[in-house]
Amino acid sequence: MSPKPQESPTESELEILRVLWANGPSTVRDVHTVLSKSRTVGYTGILKLMQIMADKGLVTRDESERSHVYSTSIREEQTQRRLVKDLLTSAFHGSADKLVMQALAAKKVTPEELSEIRRMLDELEQRSK
Image 1: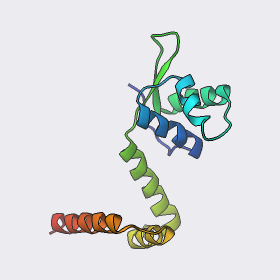
Image 2 (image 1 turned 120 degrees about the vertical axis):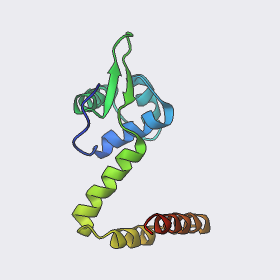
Image 3 (image 1 turned 90 degrees about the horizontal axis):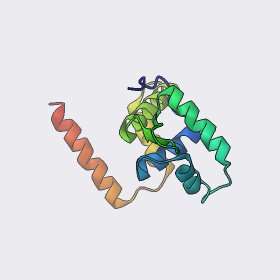
């Protein structure tokens, strides 16, 4: 079992994690193929980064086949929660309301998103009673 990651992933590591979350266990070549559709990336750079991610505990590596297969060792939701917590602490001094207000102001929110946000707030309110 890999050690639990102690630090948040970098932006480049997040790109790789997104590919693994979307596609499941993958080889370096698989990840490289996906990432190279949107920008120029080198195979060896992806390989090195995935090796570092394995050392950090962000991914696990199955070495039983010739082409090693990488899997995430953390769920997407766990990573998002950790990143939000880091942002909340560093940029908003722990103020959740300021974080939410800035998030809502940063992009146009659809009526469906607003409805879902209201539903989640109602649910949180019910749990806190």
